[in-house]
Image (spheres, helix red, strand yellow):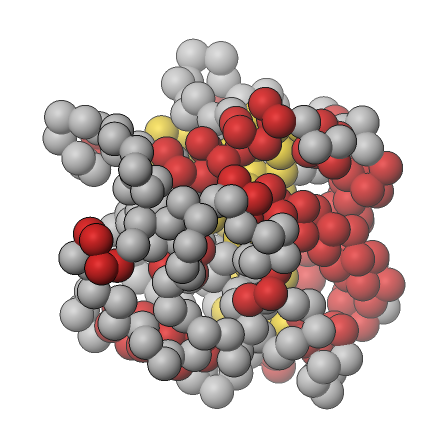
Length: 358
């Protein structure tokens, strides 16, 4: 998350607003192979699919906080461009999904337009795996800030994946082998602005409920608005189960994506979340965020992994219909199913480990 200095520029998260009880995991302790910290992270990734990652106390984490502060400033500069200028960098789906996405381009559940401005940057283009496009001046003039962001995000991502792999009794590189930074993928950095909800009519959902299609998401924002749909043992997922996620200085909000659920045979959890208006006085301020949306390598095999503590297909009777499917095709199929209404947004995963009863 951003530094405490960034948080001091906004009203605090209201004390009387309930928030999700997410585990706070220390990056520094994970780097020292702390068993209890690794267990806490793994359990969070199985039960709710979200946790806070405290970046303080480790040089990589503290450097990443500085990167986040810089990229948040750049995000403000991008969103301050004129509409005419921003239109020069529009996304061109389905072939090109990076670039600028207009506020109101998508619809929320009430069929009203969304309340989000996006600018998506491709990691492949920033890393030189693909030819870079023409960037708007705030990005073109600050490319070192994005390369530094990626350079510090990568060891954090790798650490999370190693901990998850070893928690399944697999070799540490197992998950990383599916998403090497040197392979082409649709991994992106998403810069987002949700305008202040000053008219009462704007006190509504900004970004529709969804899960992240990729592997791991690293999110940084300062004011509230993110909500997760917590499961209930009695009534499953209902509209009454939405809980705010309270941002904390120097802490990332980390969540598991759909690809990890697929590879883990449904053990890891990809949880539905959305963005609504910030609580209390924070609603009077624009909400800016930076998300690192990591995807599988385009040529990664999407079959569930075998061995370790993963439930066996033969034993549990599950059907692995991703046989022979690569990540690029898998992502496209999931996207089309949602667009065509053949699949509804829902949380997945959270099943027991092999031999475990819950």
